[in-house]
Amino acid sequence: MNNNNGTRATLHCKNNFNWQAPTLPNGLLHATAVSKAVAQIVLIRGLPGSGKTTMAGVLAKIDYKHFEADMFFEVDGTYHYDASRIRDAHAWCQRMAREALARGENVVVSNTFTHLREMQPYLEMEARSIRVIEAHGKWESVHGVPPEMLERMAARWEPLPDSMKSNNRFAM
Image 1 (cartoon, rainbow, N blue to C red):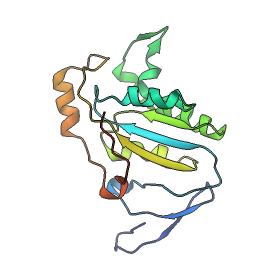
Image 2: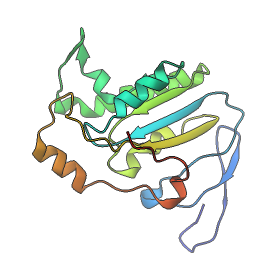
Image 3: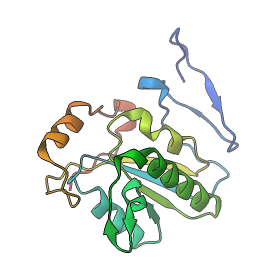
């Protein structure tokens, strides 16, 4: 990784593998090396209505465990969003992903991840590989996110650095 003076260093991780990675905004790291872990994680990011959940559903059909913060708000099949519990929702999503990876299950997480730093907890998880995919579809949000909220989210969107884009950008 690049430290503040621009030199490169090898990262030594708790999951027993090393890789060379650039320092990204807010210290975000991109892991693409192979470790002793057997499972992989796919992160799908995009604005509401971009197709994240649909893409994740395809991976779920081939035995990926699918998690997203929105699932935390589903009670008996009905979505009950509570903004005061968003931190709880993301903590739940991270815990579920970590537990599935520990069981050796492949994981797909579909969240907005408008700020790159929001992916950091997942990038630090023990996984054989980590892949980031961006969804760019333009459908109506299934959760009825109002247009003004979509505009605010789009305004704070941080694009992936070039080092994370190789073969990771898919439009639906």
